[in-house]
Amino acid sequence: MRWFQHELTLPSFPKGFHPITHHILEALPELPQAKVGLLHVFLQHTSASLTINENADPDVLVDLDRVLDALVPEDFPYRHAEEGDDDMPGHVKASLMSNSLSIPVRDGRLCLGVWQGICLCEHRRRGGRRRLVLTLQGEVL
Image (cartoon, rainbow, N blue to C red):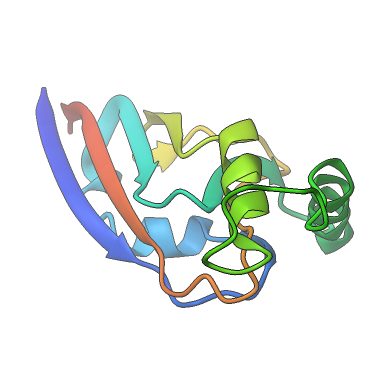
Protein backbone atom coordinates (compact mmCIF):
# COMPACT_ATOMS: atom_id res chain seq x y z
CA MET A 1 0.00 0.00 0.00
CA ARG A 2 1.37 3.40 -0.98
CA TRP A 3 0.25 6.92 -0.15
CA PHE A 4 0.62 10.04 -2.30
CA GLN A 5 -0.46 13.56 -1.45
CA HIS A 6 -0.57 16.73 -3.52
CA GLU A 7 -1.89 20.25 -3.01
CA LEU A 8 -3.71 21.74 -5.97
CA THR A 9 -4.59 25.41 -6.35
CA LEU A 10 -7.50 25.90 -8.72
CA PRO A 11 -7.90 29.05 -10.79
CA SER A 12 -10.45 31.59 -9.64
CA PHE A 13 -13.95 30.67 -10.83
CA PRO A 14 -17.09 32.82 -10.88
CA LYS A 15 -20.08 31.84 -8.76
CA GLY A 16 -21.54 28.54 -9.88
CA PHE A 17 -20.71 24.87 -10.32
CA HIS A 18 -17.52 24.13 -12.28
CA PRO A 19 -16.18 20.78 -13.56
CA ILE A 20 -12.69 20.21 -12.12
CA THR A 21 -12.07 16.51 -12.78
CA HIS A 22 -9.40 17.35 -15.38
CA HIS A 23 -7.53 19.61 -12.90
CA ILE A 24 -7.47 16.77 -10.38
CA LEU A 25 -6.30 14.18 -12.89
CA GLU A 26 -3.47 16.47 -14.06
CA ALA A 27 -2.31 16.88 -10.44
CA LEU A 28 -2.08 13.10 -9.82
CA PRO A 29 0.80 11.62 -11.87
CA GLU A 30 0.69 8.49 -9.68
CA LEU A 31 -2.94 7.65 -10.53
CA PRO A 32 -2.15 5.43 -13.56
CA GLN A 33 0.01 3.24 -11.27
CA ALA A 34 -2.81 2.54 -8.80
CA LYS A 35 -4.28 -0.94 -9.24
CA VAL A 36 -6.88 -0.43 -6.53
CA GLY A 37 -7.26 2.40 -4.03
CA LEU A 38 -9.07 5.48 -2.86
CA LEU A 39 -8.71 9.17 -3.68
CA HIS A 40 -9.72 11.65 -1.02
CA VAL A 41 -10.27 15.23 -2.21
CA PHE A 42 -10.42 17.90 0.52
CA LEU A 43 -11.31 21.57 -0.08
CA GLN A 44 -9.61 23.99 2.34
CA HIS A 45 -12.33 26.65 2.28
CA THR A 46 -15.60 27.44 4.07
CA SER A 47 -17.59 29.26 1.37
CA ALA A 48 -17.19 26.74 -1.46
CA SER A 49 -17.88 23.02 -1.68
CA LEU A 50 -17.40 19.89 -3.77
CA THR A 51 -19.86 17.55 -5.41
CA ILE A 52 -19.98 14.70 -7.88
CA ASN A 53 -22.68 15.29 -10.43
CA GLU A 54 -23.64 15.51 -14.11
CA ASN A 55 -20.66 15.86 -16.42
CA ALA A 56 -22.45 16.00 -19.79
CA ASP A 57 -25.17 18.68 -19.73
CA PRO A 58 -23.95 22.01 -18.28
CA ASP A 59 -27.57 23.04 -17.65
CA VAL A 60 -27.63 20.61 -14.70
CA LEU A 61 -24.85 22.60 -13.00
CA VAL A 62 -26.65 25.90 -13.67
CA ASP A 63 -29.87 24.49 -12.20
CA LEU A 64 -28.08 23.19 -9.10
CA ASP A 65 -26.67 26.65 -8.44
CA ARG A 66 -30.11 28.22 -8.93
CA VAL A 67 -31.73 25.76 -6.51
CA LEU A 68 -29.12 26.55 -3.84
CA ASP A 69 -29.76 30.28 -4.35
CA ALA A 70 -33.48 29.68 -3.77
CA LEU A 71 -32.82 27.59 -0.65
CA VAL A 72 -30.25 29.99 0.80
CA PRO A 73 -31.12 33.57 -0.20
CA GLU A 74 -28.72 36.47 0.24
CA ASP A 75 -31.46 38.68 1.72
CA PHE A 76 -31.98 36.49 4.80
CA PRO A 77 -31.24 38.50 7.98
CA TYR A 78 -27.82 36.94 8.70
CA ARG A 79 -25.82 38.22 11.70
CA HIS A 80 -22.44 37.60 10.04
CA ALA A 81 -22.25 40.20 7.26
CA GLU A 82 -18.77 41.81 7.46
CA GLU A 83 -17.42 40.07 4.34
CA GLY A 84 -20.23 40.91 1.93
CA ASP A 85 -23.77 39.85 1.13
CA ASP A 86 -22.67 36.57 -0.44
CA ASP A 87 -20.33 35.40 2.36
CA MET A 88 -22.75 33.98 4.93
CA PRO A 89 -24.94 32.34 2.27
CA GLY A 90 -21.70 30.79 0.97
CA HIS A 91 -20.98 29.33 4.40
CA VAL A 92 -24.50 27.90 4.64
CA LYS A 93 -24.33 26.35 1.17
CA ALA A 94 -20.91 24.84 1.92
CA SER A 95 -22.29 23.34 5.14
CA LEU A 96 -25.26 21.85 3.28
CA MET A 97 -22.95 20.30 0.70
CA SER A 98 -19.49 18.91 1.43
CA ASN A 99 -15.87 19.98 1.56
CA SER A 100 -14.51 16.51 0.77
CA LEU A 101 -15.09 13.54 -1.50
CA SER A 102 -13.83 9.96 -1.52
CA ILE A 103 -13.62 8.25 -4.90
CA PRO A 104 -12.63 4.62 -5.51
CA VAL A 105 -9.74 3.94 -7.88
CA ARG A 106 -9.38 0.86 -10.09
CA ASP A 107 -6.78 0.07 -12.75
CA GLY A 108 -5.36 3.60 -12.74
CA ARG A 109 -8.69 5.38 -13.13
CA LEU A 110 -11.26 7.07 -10.95
CA CYS A 111 -14.37 4.87 -10.64
CA LEU A 112 -16.76 7.64 -11.64
CA GLY A 113 -19.97 6.75 -13.46
CA VAL A 114 -20.36 7.47 -17.17
CA TRP A 115 -22.05 10.83 -16.59
CA GLN A 116 -20.26 11.81 -13.37
CA GLY A 117 -17.64 14.47 -12.83
CA ILE A 118 -16.14 16.28 -9.86
CA CYS A 119 -17.31 19.88 -9.48
CA LEU A 120 -16.19 22.85 -7.45
CA CYS A 121 -19.24 24.70 -6.16
CA GLU A 122 -18.19 28.33 -5.88
CA HIS A 123 -20.71 30.05 -3.64
CA ARG A 124 -19.16 33.55 -3.70
CA ARG A 125 -19.22 36.00 -6.58
CA ARG A 126 -15.46 36.48 -6.15
CA GLY A 127 -14.23 33.49 -4.18
CA GLY A 128 -10.69 33.59 -5.49
CA ARG A 129 -8.33 30.70 -5.99
CA ARG A 130 -9.32 27.56 -4.09
CA ARG A 131 -6.95 24.97 -2.62
CA LEU A 132 -7.47 21.22 -2.62
CA VAL A 133 -5.53 18.48 -0.84
CA LEU A 134 -5.51 15.28 -2.90
CA THR A 135 -4.63 12.10 -1.01
CA LEU A 136 -4.31 8.90 -3.00
CA GLN A 137 -3.84 5.61 -1.21
CA GLY A 138 -3.62 2.33 -2.97
CA GLU A 139 -1.92 -0.74 -4.23
CA VAL A 140 0.36 0.22 -7.11
CA LEU A 141 1.04 -1.84 -10.24
